Structure formats: C-alpha cells, structure tokens
Image 1 (tube, rainbow, N blue to C red):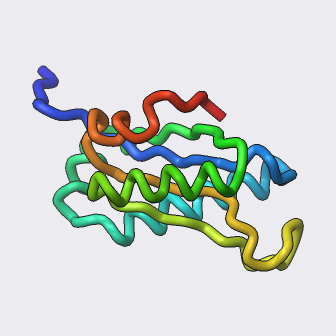
Image 2: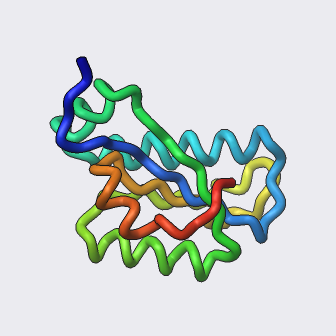
Length: 119
C-alpha cells in the first residue's frame, strides 16, 4: 500500500519564443533535468526515484519570464538547472532554452510554477 507524506516531482520550463525542433527540445529538457539532479541532495533524489521520477514540462513565453521563475525558485530554496545552448546545431551560442526546478516536494514546486500551462 502506498503511503507517503509528500509527493515529489521535477518541472522543466521551456521557452516558447524560440524555435527548436522536437529533437532539440528533447535534448535541452534532458540537459536541464540532469543538471538539476546533479545539484540535488541524494536523499531528495532517492525519494523522487522511488516515486517514479515524475517530470512535467511547462511553457514560458520568453527568456525574461524564465528568469523570473528562476529567481522565485531560488527564493524558495529549490534546486534549479538553467540551460544555455552551446550553439552547435540550431541556436546561437548561449541561447537560454529551459530551466529545471527540483526534484523536490510537489507542493513546494507548485508554489512557484502552479499557474503555468503544460508544454
């Protein structure tokens, strides 16, 4: 029987104002997810893994909006992974593409990103 006081997840915010192919978007999301996990404490990652590593992709409209959520997440003490593209394929070098928040308690992440729409 599943009994847990907290559910865990990770969210990845993706900019909608830049054009990326599906493959490029998938790669950028993967980079963000890994970056945030590498910065997370092992206890949090273990709890998240035991629950199936829930990930949600959300959209933001601009780089400015992405940075707004980055700051809010940091203010709440959440782990983040901001990704800047290397510029080897579709984008200019240094283009900010996406931001991972967590893994962490779902209720804490929702305080930051709860009003955003799915990607």
